[in-house]
Structure formats: C-alpha cells, structure tokens
Image (cartoon, rainbow, N blue to C red):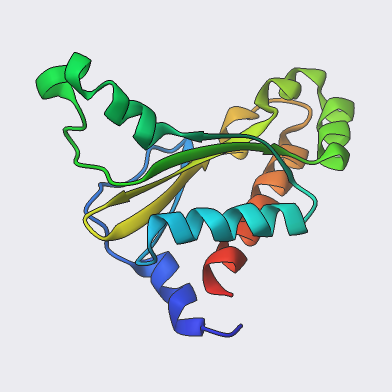
Length: 155
C-alpha cells in the first residue's frame, strides 16, 4: 500500500456526520470529492464492475434551489455524485442464490462532500439480504466492493 496513513484516515477519520444507519456502509476521507469519485469510477471498472449510470445530483439539486427555497441543501453539502454499477459474474451468483436479490442490482453508491470531508455511502447488501438463501453471497459481494473502494482511496 502506497499510503498506509491514508488508509488509516479512511477508517478512523472523525467526521461531522453522525454514525451511518445500520443498512448504510459509509467510508470517509479528507480527499476532495470529485477526485474520490474519479478514483472510485476507475477502480470499479478495473475490477470489472461496469458503471452503467452516473448522476451529478449536486448540480441537479442546485438547478432546483429556487423551488426548494429555505429547504435547499440545509446540510451544506458540496459535491453530490452518484453512480450505478454491476458485474455480470456477481449478478449471476446472486440470481443463482436467490433471484429476489436481483432487486439489489445495479449496485449504487453516492459520494458527497461536507466540511472538507468526502463520504462514500452505499446500501449494505449484507443487511438487505438477511434471511435470504443468498445472504452469504450478498455479504461476500459487499466485502468485495468495500475492498475496491478502500483501495481506490489509498492508491
């Protein structure tokens, strides 16, 4: 690992956002959000998780600021970008384990910035698949995606 200290920051960085809900995996880093997004995109594609959709939610929210009035961006988020991604081998593995888990596809995550910290949030497959015959496969997939994201933030 090139920057072991950055890996430590990703795991231990004290953020201004409270603890994530049990069903949300959240990673955080002091890296700038647009750079984080680019790193994640490249890392996912390198690992054969193809990005199938991108959305710059921050820009779209800003376009509607007048309509939202005082309710617009009360958390003062900077960049807000989302992407949907998938891997055909994992899609097949989940479909074989429990076809209902296809509701989780494509996978998605959001990157946002607040007060100089970037956050990556995504649904925890292990939580959503509780009690499913495919629970173990979903848990493995979650761990694989987490490894990819952590590598993207430390390389």
